[in-house]
Amino acid sequence: MSNKYDRVFNFSAGPSVLPLEVLENVQKDLLNYKGTGQSVMEMSHRSAEYQKIIDEAEADLRTLLNIPDDYSVLFLQGGGTLQFSMVPINLLRNSKKADYIVTGQWAKKAYKEACKFGDIRCVASSEDKTFSYIPKVSKEDFREDADYVYICYNNTIYGSKFPYIPDTGDIPLVADMSSCILSEEIDWSKFACVWAGAQKNVAPAGVTIVIIRKDLIGHAPEGTPVYLDYKIHDEKGSMYNTPPCFSIYVAGEVFKYLLANGGVKAMHEKDIRKAQKLYDAIDESSLFKGTVEKEDRSLMNVTFVTGDPDLDKEFIALAKENGLINLKGHRSVGGLRASIYNAMPEEGVDALIDLMKKFEAEKK
Ligand SMILES: Cc1ncc(COP(=O)(O)O)c(C=O)c1O
Image (cartoon, rainbow, N blue to C red; front, side, top):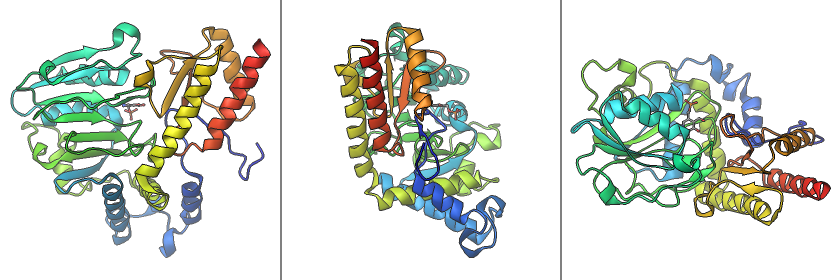
C-alpha cells in the first residue's frame, strides 16, 4: 500500500479499525501525555490527570448518545462475555424470569449463561434459518412478570440487525450493542440497559461500556462476587479497582473525534451510505449473494457468499494481496464478511466493491 503508513483496509469484526486521526493523537501523546511526562499506560488511575480522562470520556459519551441523567455509565472489564453473566445476576431481581430473543451465537451464549441464574425463556429464535433473519416479536410474546427482555441488537457473526425495537411495555429491555454502538442514536425511552464491548466501534479491547437505568442497580443477590455487582462500580465511578485505563483513554479520544466530526447523526448517515453501496453491489452481482433478509441487514457487518467455498477463499486471498484484509466470514459460518464500522473509510468500501467487480468479470 502506498499511503502514509502503508496501512491496509481492515475489515475485521473486532478488534477492528480505529480512526487514523485518533491513532495519530495517541501516538503523539504516547511518551508524554499532555506534559505530564508519562504515558497513560504508566499513569496512576488515582491521579488527577487520569480522573480527568475518565470523567471526560463519560461526559462525551453522554453527549454523543444523549444519555439521560437517570442512567449510569460504567466502564468495566471482562468483555461482552462477562455481561452475559452480570445482566442476569443483577437484573433477575423479582420474579427471576427473563425472556430472550435468540438471533445469533452471542444472543444464544447470553441465553445459556442466564439459564444458570433463573427461569429463562427463549421467546423467539432464528436458528431455524442459520440466523439469517430477525423474528418479529410483539408485546404479547413476553411474560408480564419477566424481570427483563434481552436482545442482541446487531449480530456481528451473521450480519443482521433488529429493524425494529421490540415493544416490551414496562419490562426493561436490555440490548447488547457491542457491534453497533455509536452507529445510530438510541431512544432511551425504549432501552433500560445497553452494553457494548469496545473493540468494534469504540476502542481497543479491554473496556466494556454498560449504560443502565439507575433503578436497575443494587439488586444483585447477597453473596454476589464483588466485581459482578453493578452497584459497586456505580458507587465508585468505575474505579472500585484498577479500570482498563488505556482502553478508556482511547475510547475517550474516539468520543472527542466523533464529537468534532458531526456526532452520531453524521456517523449514521455515513454508515448508511457505505452499507448501501456495498449491499447494492452485492444485489447487482451475479456472483456474490447476501446471506441475510434484506430488511434485517446490518449496517456494520455485511455478510455475503459466492456459493462456492473455493471461490470465497480465492477472493479473500486476492483481497489480501490488494490490501483489503480480514474478509473471511466467522469460522462458524464461512463465506465473506466485511465489517464496516464507523472508522472504515468510505474509500475502503469503494476499493472492496471495485475488486468484487473485477473478480466477477474475470470469472465470467
Ligand atoms: C455482539 C457481540 N456480543 C458479545 C461479544 C463477546 O464479546 P467478548 O469477546 O468481549 O467477550 C461479541 C464479540 O465479538 C459480539 O460481537
